[in-house]
Image 1: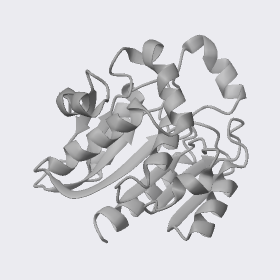
Image 2: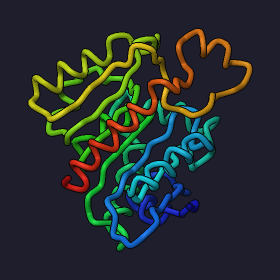
Image 3: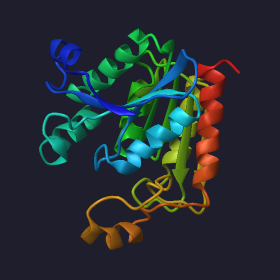
Image 4: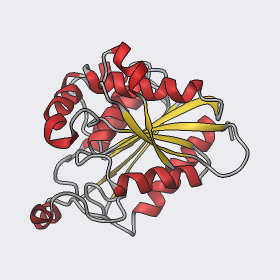
Length: 242
């Protein structure tokens, strides 16, 4: 498990000039299928690193790309959110750079999935038609032109929470769009869960956490294991061919 420098190819492609990522490598003999992981709005913190470690334990060479490499959340959050809303920008170049870095690595089989949480879930959804073999969208915001953004997408597994006040009805809308487009998918809304329910600890500034809990933004240890199981089954099918 290590922080790696991705800056050289990213600079040529117009991405973050100091692009970094956290690489979590499975134990044992490779090569392994790989996953690009995209962090929440609060950045590539310890909770996100543990998520990457979990995927590595499941057998996936996991690169958690840091979309805030050029200055941290304070300097990069607004531009990154604008990219998410517009569907274009530096963040997408950084995600593509991470994907290509994994595909060229000798430890990778060539199969690469994408997974994201919160803000990262929205990016994972928007990247699902950009050369990935499978996508996992976890409480990610939906784009305005949902059908257009999903055209040609890879198979998608998505996890949402009924008690998530930030994304009411998102699961049903995503399910409908994927069905209409004929894209293989598995979307579930968990009745007890809110936003960020797969985290193993609260995140964000401590003064804001009471408000976040009221908005349904908190871990849900009851729902998270099934959500992770669904992801692992999805990746096993589409990245391992099981």
